[in-house]
Image: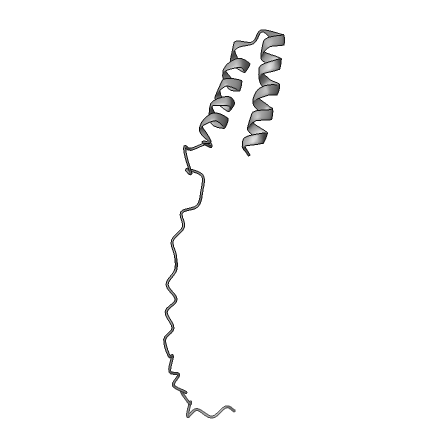
Length: 73
């Protein structure tokens, strides 16, 4: 993802210089900042799903068979 952001920043900055567009220059600077600091859209590790290890609990399950006295007609 860092390489993609770097490529995107370079392409946008070239276009910003050619078109003399300050908004595109700011967008390119934002992508360069993300590349330099290794951050994503929500800060460092903000887009990752939190990891919570699950404890395996094994319990013996006992089943009780229930019989019906009703007769089917």
